[in-house]
Amino acid sequence: MKIYSSVLRTNGKQLDGNTSKILVIIKPKKSGINSKQTTNEVKKIAKKYKLNTGVKSIKDISNGGLIIDCNNKEESELVNDIISKNKVIGDYLKGKSEAQLSSEFKFRFHLRRNSSNQNKTYVFELSPQLKQIINKMQTINIGWQACAWNDFIHIIRCFKCNKFGHKSADCKESHDSCGLCSESHKTKDCKKQESEHCCINCKQFNSIKQQAILATNHSSFDKSCESFKRIKNIIISKIDYD
Figure 1 (tube, rainbow, N blue to C red):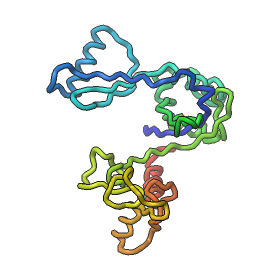
Figure 2 (cartoon, rainbow, N blue to C red):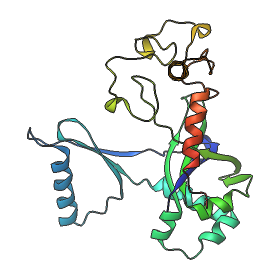
Figure 3 (cartoon, rainbow, N blue to C red):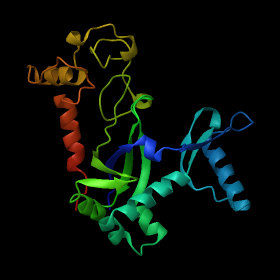
Figure 4 (cartoon, helix red, strand yellow):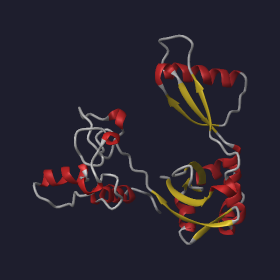
């Protein structure tokens, strides 16, 4: 069964408190150790001493190191708050085990646009069955607020060539392509004005089709970009909503 994400928007002041992401960085003392070996050693130690760390994910880093993302108490409290304050959600999840609950309704991460903006976006994974229930709800009660929600569609983008479908680490292009003007330099080094923006993806599409089908007078980050919307629609079409 496929799982997809939905976004819940709320105000950070009400729920933020001292919430923080618990990240543990582990690096081997000896050189020549890879991340897989480090992971195996950590698992052995955790099993030997019966450590219940609540690990959410493990990410490889350089020199055989790991970043371990641990469960956060506030995240569980957030999920429980939503369940208790939204009767239709609570009724559906009532009586389910912890494992069943995790497969139905799981906190993934939160986004905050900048330090001055107190609004925060919470992203959850929902089962198709729970999503059908939430589809009938205009808002979700969180804390003291009724919060709007939207589907969160994750689109993989390369910040080297600024095309879709892969990350910078996997990019096969020999040079950078600016996400603002499409020229051969890093996006952060671009000196072009907004009126000079040119989308690398729409530009390439027109080149392949050998005619100016799509407008290119925007950056590749523009949400109204036809290339962006096409990729988004492809992803949506693959989501299991039933």
